[in-house]
Amino acid sequence: MASCAKLDAARGARRGQLIFVFLGLALGWPALGQQVSPDAVRLDAARKAFDYGRWNEAAELSQGPESQTADLDFLRGLALARQEHWEEARRAFVAGHRKTPNDPRFFVELAGVDYKQNNYLSAKRNLRAALRLGSRDTYTLDFLGTIYFLQGNLEAALKYWNAGDKPRLRNVNVQPAPRVKERLLRRAIAFNAPQVLSGDSLLTTHARLENLGIFSRERVELTSAGNNFEAALHLAERDGWGDSKLEGAVSLLSGLPYSTIYPEIYNLGHRAVNFTSLLRWDSEKRRALGTLSMPLFDNPARRLRVYFDARNENWNLSRTFFGSTALSDLNMRRIAGGVELRSVVNGRWSWSTGSEIASRSFRNLPGTSSVAERVFFTNANSFAYWLRADRSLLRVPEHRFTVDSSAEGRLGRTFAENLGAFGALRGAVDAHWLPRVTGDDLEMRMRVRAGATLGAVPFDELFQLGVERDNDLWLRGHAGTLGGRKGAAPLGRRYFLTNWEIDKNVYSNGIFTVKLGPFLDTGSIADSSGLFGSQRWLWDTGVQCKMRVLGSVTVVLIYGRDLRGGNNTFYGSLLH
Image 1 (spheres, rainbow, N blue to C red):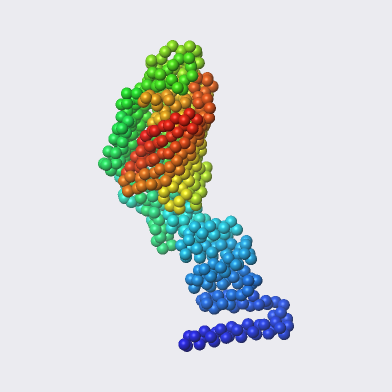
Image 2 (tube, helix red, strand yellow):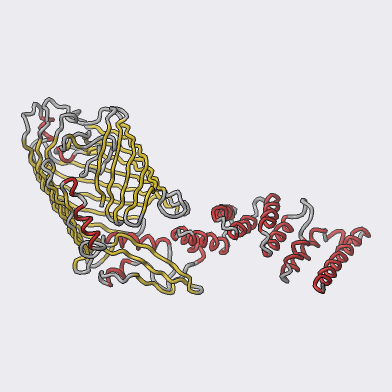
């Protein structure tokens, strides 16, 4: 009762103050009538109440007609928010925003109300609106970064935290302790205490770790430590046969359904020296591929790769070669070896260069009737040099959307009659979007690729549009093989290809992850000789299923339909 009496007395005093002001205005006191408005008096009184922590009093003093100033609405919203009257506070901020739509304060405070009600989506929308209106204060940036951090989007959080010189690291550690040499790992991590963890250093670290080729997964975890943060880098390291003996066995034997094994060994000598290989004994497509890669001068940003590739393949070109000779039993033997250097400049771009020596021979080749035909099937040796650049064109971490690009130029010479110097250009743009706030439950990707070869080249240098294990230009309604033999998909020296797909997680149990979704492919391939090419624009659609096993091997099952030809394709392959 005593407290109620005090509250009534305080309210009576405030009414007396207001009556005194209104009497002064009615009597025409110059100082009050000309310089002080009723809203200004109420605002001053409400501010004093708010400053002294009397939230209820401040809310009452700032309550008034709809025509009152936006400052009174703002103060009322603040006072109501302090009392956790969220909906009333929201109405006050909305009323003030309508009067001053270019004032970013209302968006920031509305975001605070949304945050308290766990409506992160609306909070982010209001904070971004405040930034568009020019609010660049540290509080707004820090607030928005914190929401992204709580949602597990560290890259987006750093984008806003870095503007305020945050988050400063107190310590950086790696969990579990890796077996790779400490010097290599230390040079791969682009951030350290007491530095500020930046978005660029996070991306650079990811690119360098990927370049080492021994980490199948990596994640950076931040935990608050007073005014600073502790950073923990969680790495899944391949050592020996893989992350584990089971995973190594799965990877080795995963190609048995199509007569292939993948012998691999990682992190030799704990120096990120890796040997990967492929052995295929399919009678139509024999192949042996071995690759040895290692960091150059113990620098994780520079990686040297040496490879050897031998093939003995039977081709059926009866559907894709338009010459005078039916080539249904062509045998090609090709041996190639090369070296490549890849350099990671930073997290946004890298480059690589290399050279290759190859020798090929053709058998079961009937007599060809023209020089143009003989050019493609000439036994010859060749030398090629290439330079490639990979660049991130756009990153919008708030929406988990990226656009990456690549460009490659190739020059070479084939040492044979009617052949000689040649060149090739290839380019790609890859857009990737994860619509969900976290995780990869839904994933969308679109890739546009194009390429062209100048000069006369042997048959094995042609591009191919179709699903085939040794080909990366997938047109998923066109099978690349016929009766187990390559050559069913269209070939040529110029191509354009787009691939669009959506993947939706339909099942996951920690060992298997199954994704399912539709795709749409379109493209064309041509050759100036008229002996190869698609001869018309191609459209394919269908459904694909991706099964991820133990986080290392992905089985891809495809049903595709050629919308032009009406043919159906069922295909299974493996991605490492």
